[in-house]
Image 1 (tube, rainbow, N blue to C red):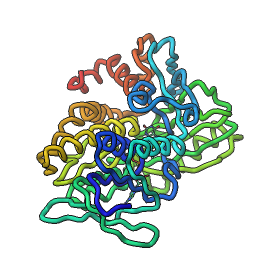
Image 2 (image 1 turned 45 degrees about the vertical axis):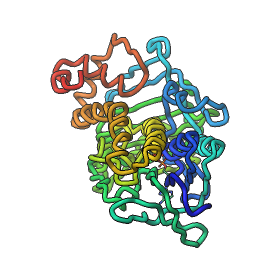
Image 3 (image 1 turned 135 degrees about the horizontal axis):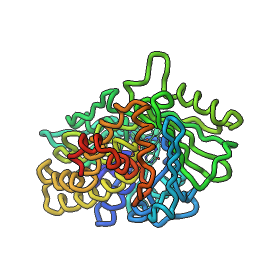
Length: 393
Ligand code: FAD
């Protein structure tokens, strides 16, 4: 580890690794630090991604793909099932990843391109001089170091502190966070070709249960509920236990994951003098699906390119880094804003309304397999909803 780099990236999740890879590819000197001793472990993710978007960043590799999904089955509270197969959808569907291997593969890509990657290295604060971020203070194997950088990139995930250290408000209210619990289970007996979604306020208030196949009769069985619905003696894990005991009494739990997903939509700013935030640290996950892997990678790519542009023009001020802010808001930002509007409507639905939406889906011709597209189709099929969400169409 040197004491000076062009770019220091904090956090080796998908956002950090793609940022580091992109910046290193451009010829910048890059340090990628990760506080954990193993990149990607422990997993806090259901590991579902869109194939099309993933391929934009990395060639699929059988070592980190657990399942190649052929369709989705979505259940309304009254049990009405909507099935979307590849034939109906006629579009690309998703992979379920092994993130422990996937995240490491992304970090390896960054390293291969020339970035220095160091694990067991925690950022403890920023070095700030004259209102400019000038580097990072890190703790590595019990020693503290100051590392200078022209640009620091906060890719430190949902629990991000980097933004706050730079004076950016990244606080999330309970109503803006989906609290999640997930089991990796064996013996569920599910059809491994499908992802399953269960909706309903009794099952998952203001959220949903997901079951994503992991191969060999294993599956990620998880739940996300809005933070403000958790409490009064019943938390996400309690809802998950109720669901699992009811549906899969004979299944075995091999792993437990708990975590949060920001569903707040875009925060006001993601740049400061000498600093950019990417991925969950910038609250770039999708407010309705909670998916954040692809957005993190997309934002990371933009951030890596903008780091190069800003350093080339010898101007790393917030004004100069605003190029990143504008570019991600024009692309993934639009999707995030639209999803937020859908989420705010969707989370108010009663089970009766969810059932009626499920029924109105009969005969809808889906053009893609994403949950978001499904929801759009639902809303389009229901005139009252369409009126409430007219701003989207
Ligand atoms: P992370 O992947 O969280 O990476 C941040 C990294 O920064 C971590 O490795 C962390 O250890 C490191 N770090 C933090 N602080 C420091 C520090 N001070 N110094 C050094 N390193 C630090 N998304 C999907 O697309 N599909 C899904 O199916 C899906 N399911 C989910 C299920 C659950 C239960 C949860 C909680 C989330 C899910 N998500 C899903 C969201 C997805 O996991 C995140 O959006 C994604 O991981 C964001 O990537 P990131 O790189 O921004 O952050």
